[in-house]
Length: 256
Ligand code: 0L1
Ligand code: MG
Image (cartoon, rainbow, N blue to C red; front, top):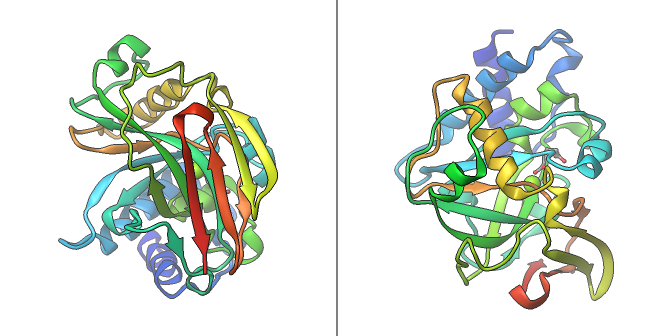
């Protein structure tokens, strides 16, 4: 099968929510570069005037998350406007095996491109910060994949629920924020912003370093989801997920 055909298979699984065999079952030598090409082709197929490209997500940015799925490096995915939830509700039946994790997201006001930028250079380009819940949903059977597989599947991206409140980048030390993730009122997980590559700003620097290899960067107005502060919790119909960010506020997601 060609990369284009694998991209069609992934795009169809994303649209139909029918789990598929991971690509490396039939192409064990799939490289990371080929996997990003599959991601690009499959995501560009879904982009229309009603489903615009809105930015990037970083995934597998914490040791906990890397261990949870058995890989050892961060990855990136593409975000589109239809991933951005309008209400804090999702319908479990519209997903294969959804999971939810707590993050922070940055919105950019300036274009940025290049490898190994400094926090000074990146903060200068950030307009504001949002609290975020990310819904991930691997399109592979049993949520099981290798690193190239998950890259091809757009880093399991599915939905994003952002806080109503936008924060100044200088509100607090984003590495020190604490998040408690609750499921139906019961505390399940907790973490700090430092879980995201030491500080979420380093996640953006890592993203830009990866994008620079392809001559890409971040444009004004684009969103970057920086990666899980906690592991991801599997969710089902009837669940209420709450992420408590302490004095910054809370986000809830209702699963119908
Ligand atoms: O956002 C993430 O960290 C998810 C990356 C892909 C791995 C997974 O599906 O858990
Ligand atoms: Mg994530």
